[in-house]
Image (cartoon, rainbow, N blue to C red; front, side, top):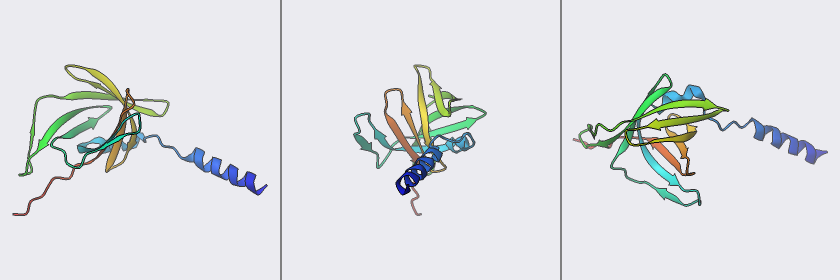
Length: 140
């Protein structure tokens, strides 16, 4: 009887663990992000200690855009005019980012999001993990 109760408790706790992203947290997408890790479908990983470019994301009312930025030591950024527009859909508790650019269209599933990190998985099964960008501060 004790084993059954333990098993039932584990099953109840496991089923209550909702790993989906909360729609209210989508506001956290706004800001500057740098890639921290890429995980490939075969389980191999690539770590990124230093990034020469970061992503700026602006999201509002279900739509947004993403731009590549190059941080400079004086606290400013260089950028091109290239923009990746995106919209978000929420189907069966899965939040998907639908991207369009001048050259392509693709989708990424948002698998984790909080104020400091987020992760997406693309259609090829590659997971991209991002962390909030912290500018390098050089004392004067």
